[in-house]
Length: 107
Image 1 (cartoon, rainbow, N blue to C red):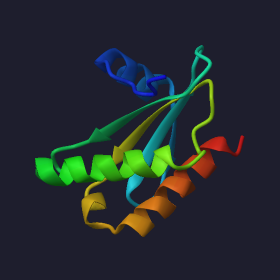
Image 2 (tube, rainbow, N blue to C red; image 1 turned 60 degrees about the vertical axis):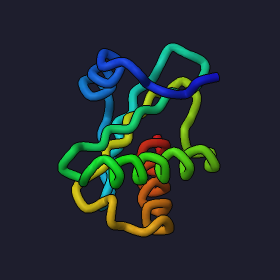
Image 3 (cartoon, one colour; image 1 turned 120 degrees about the vertical axis):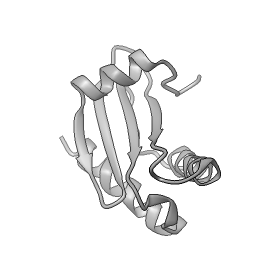
Image 4 (cartoon, one colour; image 1 turned 90 degrees about the vertical axis):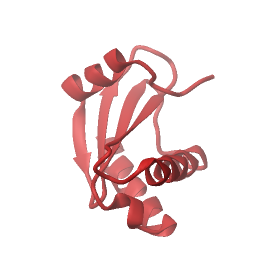
């Protein structure tokens, strides 16, 4: 099953209806979904860095979330990177992802 948000319409819905959860370098938008699995999208602005930095950051975030069990079924998520997040190390990024998903899933 593909767990990605792909269309602009899907991202817009999550931004508009979702709840925000912040950490130092990331923001997570989460909203309940009618589907029986989770879907996740990544939003990384050009302000974060050039294409190679943005792609590296996106690969790191995908890997962290892939090997974890943070996302819950019946939810859609958008992970938005803040400026300066591309310079953080992998372990710190992993902690940031844990923080935002813990905030989102505590209810």
